[in-house]
Length: 160
Image (cartoon, rainbow, N blue to C red; front, side):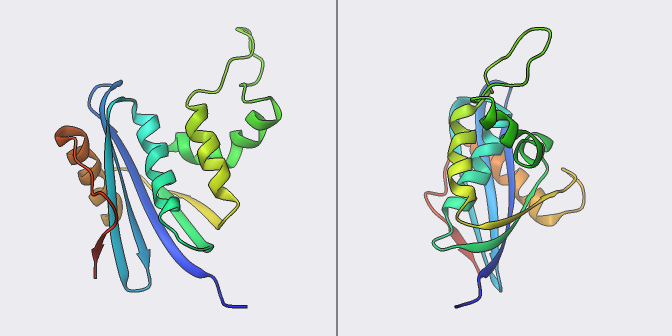
């Protein structure tokens, strides 16, 4: 059995206004290879763009991998590591509160992400946004550019 490939995916999402024009970006690192992927949505929210960055990064992997996903989004990290299992058990509804049970926001994207999760062994890592992580800073710049200019990479832009 061949050893699994080890990939690091750094992600970020951006939104001008919230809702408003949005962008997402991810950087994939595999050995000495690096690729950037980014895109946009005309009218969206920051949380949707954060999720889209993770989804697109994982979809770019063509075979099962050991993955570290680095995100500055507590929404994404807690959603995956704490809330997803409960949401699924509750039929994609949040836990009962004084207001009653409410549908999970961005359910379509959470369901897409949930489908992808089983293909890979994933470690979720939170990184402080706008700090000292070069890949996070680059993702932030790409996501903002995508949101402002409404541009997409159209695929992985490889940096060697």
